[in-house]
Length: 111
Image (cartoon, rainbow, N blue to C red; front, side, top):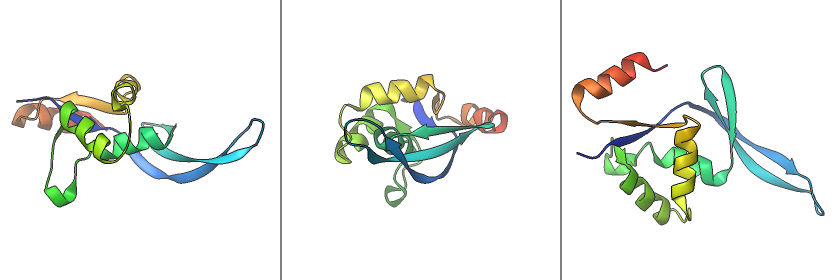
């Protein structure tokens, strides 16, 4: 059974940020509350993070790394692997064995 990738944090909204440079422009950003901090994600990061929740219309409850990469390709989120690795390192994604006690232990201990 493959390890499940689970998103961590709570989505708090989308907003626009100004990017400075030769021609200043707006860029979408997405806020995620992680513990007592807020983390800003770019579109690629937020797309991968959101897809890790699975697809409700397919009743998908657990997403493996392989299925997350596949979902990202279908959503035109290119080169998902470095983004997944970054989100894992930043603890916005975590790995859990999708079996009874491991999932329950994770849910009970993680807030």
